[in-house]
Length: 114
Length: 114
Length: 152
Length: 152
Ligand SMILES: Nc1ncnc2c1ncn2[C@@H]1O[C@H](COP(=O)(O)OP(=O)(O)O)[C@@H](O)[C@H]1O
Ligand SMILES: Nc1ncnc2c1ncn2[C@@H]1O[C@H](COP(=O)(O)OP(=O)(O)O)[C@@H](O)[C@H]1O
Image (cartoon, each protein chain N blue to C red):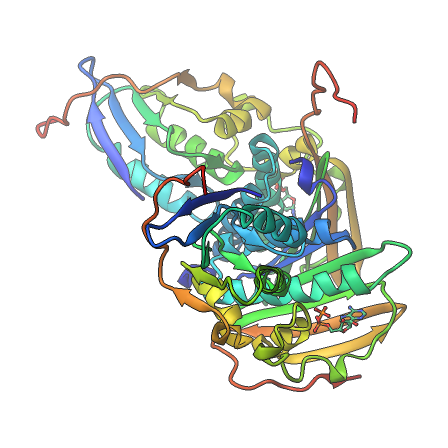
């Protein structure tokens, strides 16, 4: 699971997913990898999905799982949804429970002290 | 049927076929087009086949037909055979009745007086 | 493509009933649908529905022994006809996916059959010869007519 | 590809029995075989053999009424299994293409069945339910010798 991790000047943790598919085959390792990445400081956690051109309900379930892991005081937000991914969120109305950005915010390299 | 027609300094007529397939669907129009093109002066007639990546026995038959139309004193030669085309000539041993060049010779624009 | 309207293309893919194999097969199916000039929205809908159905089969369909899953897609002018067969136990899909889990429940599953229903027409389940047979259609986007039609 | 060795892919294409449609179908088949990662030499052999068989059907197979031709290719690890069915009249291929026309004859036709034999293994012709069924294999490694047609 390839992730690219950075921070915004405002202190958000940005995790940009480098995979093209979020399906049942990768759902578990995706959840693990995001949990590990989110051990770094930063809030909210913004998940970049612009490379993901396919996501099924297993992928959606994994994202919901990550949101619950992070807990209520560290929101999970989404950015850069491709048309297919957007459609799954819309059909399930799960686009109402996430803040969704059109694109990833500008970031700087991760502060190692973070 | 797209053809590109030119001459060599030695007086050969060069007809470079711009199609990718010589199959049953185009065999007749191919034969007609080459016959028309060969009304121009020049001998031998060298047929360029480097764009043709598929030729079946209908295409082979059309080339043999052109050879017979040209008659014995104006030989038909071939150039630039792709692997698939070469294989059809080899399997049918028709590579023994044509002079086959690796590539098209250098040409100049067609002399309109020709 | 005008010149291919009289050609029909069926893609028949088979794999073992495991989550990994099913996902590889779905990727391959999408590539072939792409090459067969299926419009991308329709291809995405079909890929999603097939993913939901096939993942269910691999997850719920056979605890002990693996069986073969067959996925046939017939490419028609106005949609994709799909037929999925597997050797899992019989089940009753009639009550599945009639609604999606409410968003505020933050459910991590249970969306599959809802998506299948939402994106297909003519959904049909049959049990025959020890196999589950699921048939459905993924409709195409309506073809827009050109402003002027050339007569010949 | 390692990760697709457990996925089997069958391509089933159908068209009307006319020379034009058959050539469009062959082009489409080649594109799909390419997308399915069939090595190019094998793809070319298969395309040639299918072209010879299908062109024969469109030319000799039905004078009066057109029928549908079905061309199924199963992509296996070590070759392509092909099956062509058509509604043309029965014929006897056992004597066709045992040799190619001598080059010096400058024949414009008669190479078709020779090429079919030369590039395939397991060639089998059957007449069943008013259809001709031609099965053959295009192996991954080149065929050494011409083989005879098995009748059944
Ligand atoms: N192919 C199948 N075989 C057996 N049971 C199935 C099958 N598909 C679905 N089910 C049952 O229906 C339930 C709902 O399926 P679905 O809507 O896809 O959500 P999920 O799979 O996330 O639970 C599954 O949990 C399972 O119990
Ligand atoms: N599908 C078919 N139906 C009926 N007759 C056929 C069929 N295929 C071949 N034949 C007969 O066999 C002959 C030899 O075929 P072939 O070797 O392909 O050469 P060609 O088609 O160039 O004559 C044909 O001329 C035709 O009479």
